[in-house]
Image (cartoon, rainbow, N blue to C red; front, side, top):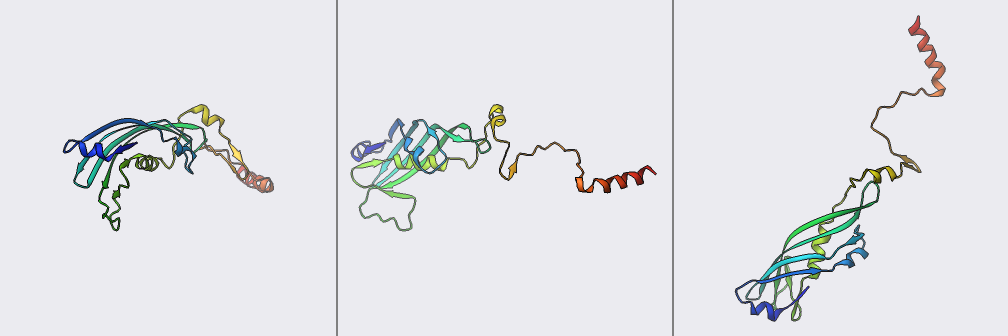
Amino acid sequence: MKFPLQKLRQAGDEPFVFDEEVDISELEGMNNDIRRITPVHVKGQAITRGNDITVTFSIDGEMVLPCARTLVDVTYPFHIEAMELFNLSPYHTEEGDDEVHPVDGEMLDLTPYIKENVQLEIPTRIFSNDDEAHDEAPQEGKGWQVVSEEPEETKVDPRMAKLQSLFNDEKNE
């Protein structure tokens, strides 16, 4: 999603409005949990004041993530409100000013900032509500097993069974 600086300057005091679909499917290949992501809908406005450009935009889309319990696909819809600040001055320094991004060349590329905001929106854990997926999930593995929350019958260790019989005999007397 690139905008020529000339177009932004021509807007003058009026905001430059945009509304587009952006394909950010390269996020699927990065080292994150995104299995699939649909093209996102980005709409917003850019306001130019001197050498400063303020871009406010919203991002709407859906990504497919693995369930934390069962690893099945879970669709996660998201809506992000974002604001990015840019500076056109060649003399602008980034020292101590992490919030303002310099613009190189004659194009303002918003795509990296869209990707960054989407990556920040990825939840740490997501769970599937599908009961069938929970039934198909593995119930045990090497060194672990799923334990139900229902109370189990008290089982007597076979080595202690004779000792238990002595206690039972005492109670009967």
